Amino acid sequence: MTDALRDDSGEADMPALHLQARAEAAFLPDEPRGVIQCENVDVYYGNFRAVTDVNLKFGLHEITALIGPSGCGKSTLLRSLNRMNDLIDGARVEGQVLFRGEDMYGKKVDPIEVRRRIGMVFQKPNPFPKSIYDNIAYGPRVTGMRVESMDDLVEEALTKAALWGEVKDKLKQSAFGLSGGQQQRLCIARTIAVKPDVILMDEPCSALDPIATVKIEDLMHELRQEYTIVIVTHNMQQAARVADRTAFFTALADEGTGDRTGILVEYGKTTQIFEHPVDQRTEDYISGRFG
Amino acid sequence: MRTIGSAITGSIRGEHPIAGGGNGERRPAALIFLVLLWLSLLVAIGVLITLIVTIIVEGQGQFSWRLFTEYPASSPDRAGARPAILGSAWVIATTAVMTIPLGIAAAVHLEEFADKKNWFNRFVELNVQNLAAVPSIVYGLLALAFLSMLGVRDKNIVIGGALALSLLILPVIIIATREALRSVPSEIRQGSLALGATQWQTVWRQVLPSAVPGIATGSILALSRALGEAAPLLVLGALVFVSFDPNGILSGYTTLPIQIFNWTGRPQEGFHQLAAATSVLLLVLLVVMNGLAIFIRNKFQKRW
Image (cartoon, rainbow over all chains, first blue to last red; front, top):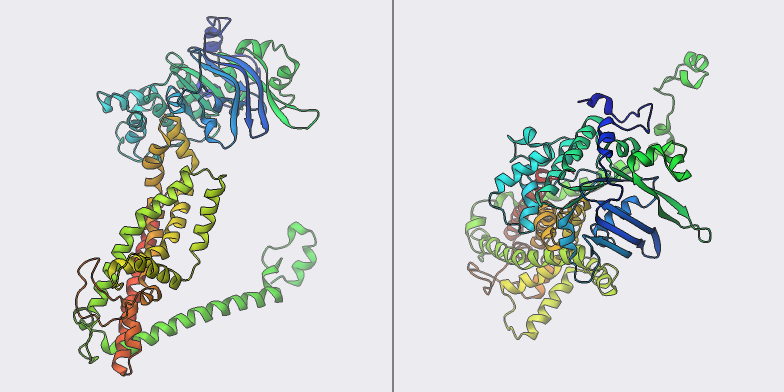
């Protein structure tokens, strides 16, 4: 492991990719096999259009990173991918978000079912004020999953989240006793426990120290074998390290009203985005000239 | 204090000693204000201590187990507050059973489910706030009218008193519960919903359990307010000479504040002492309840 080299301090040859990611990138199909597909998606908060006209495919068993400056709507878009935006007053989505070809915002679709299939990990670790065991068991219990042995399921989820070894002797203890990084992995384990297809991560490492960050990034590489991951990150090195594909967003000010809205500038393989960006704005952003 | 020497040599700001450098706290205006604050505090505490000491001194002659075991009598030396203690217990327990579930349910609806932009919900919300400030005797009159409407002739029954007190503390419990629900971080709700839990499951399994300490504290404080109330019960005709134990929600009753009120009105000095002793008992009860509330709050306080 080259953990020590992979901290957040910023490498000198910043856009250069990690060797592992580079090797994986070679096997990446040119077109993603879309699990979630955005077609002309606009996201509104009341009359304010936070995101405008996004067309994007999130590939099966791929890690897609959404990057861009603050206020570019990347988190908003992420939250509209599992209908978490429904919870905000006045939020609405226009255009289509397809999950396996089915309109996620269709009339017959239950948002509860959408969220069960498309899990979410938040910026700040948010374990429930319960034991570690109950944190994991909560999802399967409330969604009425048929579970033969809850103990096995808990162990499996914690193992997949690379947390089992650290917590196996204190499953009945409060989750609040864990460190921030452990709490975040617990939240990932909790999400895995309901067996979703897609895991959305909203800046999952921004509240963590570099060592905990590396653990989560390694974990994402593991999880990629089974899950499709979409991650919003402020940290370009992180996107370069973990993502197969990267979508760059920016905020565009309306000339008439001055309202800013998020637009998708460029989307492609992470190698291409970081090494040969097509759009000038992408290049400016990843080379640190703005944002 | 800054010495002259340091004042001269310390001409550069960074060299001023911190001690005595700025005396914003010692300016006359600040001092006067501070003294005034202390005086206000002294007056408040002084009055409270005087009150407590007075009733303890006055009541000490009558403070014996007789207070707990005997029924009111025509002679102060044989009288006790047993029916009042039991009556208070009955009324408060009935009030708690009637009010707490209702108050929590109303608060959960308003806080978690109601559309806050809907005019009706906003109207209800505003009214709950205002109802908490309505004088207690108004609730007594309301309960009286309600019982009359139902054709209840004898309104001095436990359930009638509990009804009046429930109306009195329902808004308080609703407000306290809403505060407790609001203090549960939205991350917990989002985490639950993101796992595919329904809103109902989220409220029932995450939000409510997290809010229990706050709800318990608020409810106990509300009940202790009800325990000290006399006015609404007087309107319902609770001022009677009760020489039996209340034994159900339809039983006649008296309560501690009413018993105190009753004895204070008697001409004999002995009854006044008895009233003072009963007041001490009521005070102890209230202190215990408030202490319990503080204990629950501290013990189960969640640090997110």
